[in-house]
Image (cartoon, rainbow over all chains, first blue to last red; front, side, top):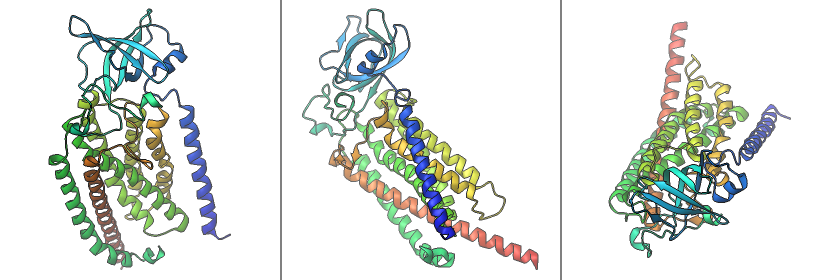
Length: 149
Length: 238
């Protein structure tokens, strides 16, 4: 074997091993590297009340309820298989609408309601001009995101 | 490929190619940005902030594509000992790092009005930041040698190892729940409306040509420096 071919074989073996190691490491991180729990994974993880976690999912249509004080809201976060009621007090992001994604920092109350300290909106992978969206701002359509995974 | 093992032949080709790539790229990039800024409809949820896409997406593509270029050039350097491969890998590093930084900055500016935060430590954002740091490490390593034009193998090995991060960035939004949305443009098609997709493609093409021109400029400069260095040494020897 010529030295050039020796180097080629060595480099290919090293490269394959490297990519394999990277994938194994990434796969092992599966749960730990997720940025948030979905209602399903949260239920499976049996999170204790009071533990600070992050919850993400879709805001269920028709679920946003505003309290009389104007700044407290409750809504339901859902993924495909489960739902979770969330209470939040404060200003919501502009993109926080029903049918759209949301990520909430907070903790479970003993009564099972998730109390959020902060809300972040999620944008999905669809980019649609306003005039083409024959739906109003409050009902975003989602295809590949959390709901239909 | 070994036709270009002779730097003189490469330079003869690179000399007219550099301004051609540069001016076409600049024209397309500026045109696409103006198109994106003034002639695309507002987005259903994001409104006008969608327009930052025409810088953010090309920057992300070039940040990642740049590292793939470094990795491929490094492989060619190590296996075939091609004399220009190490020069090419080094020439890619600074433009690549710059575009990775532009991607992070524009993403942050986009995230504030869209998500409600400048930064979160989710899989996509974190792995992209790691890419930027890898670039800095590569640049430091590639410049560590005191000899001009020295293409050490240590930097090449680092360039190849660092490529592991590229599929991780790409898969991060699929493997892990993340703040960043999933891929809009996949092999199966695009979920971006044509009104945005057309200028986006022009922007990606334009910035890519500019990137190519920058790399050629830096390669030519590096080769010129090597020649000066060699001549100086010869004069010192006489």
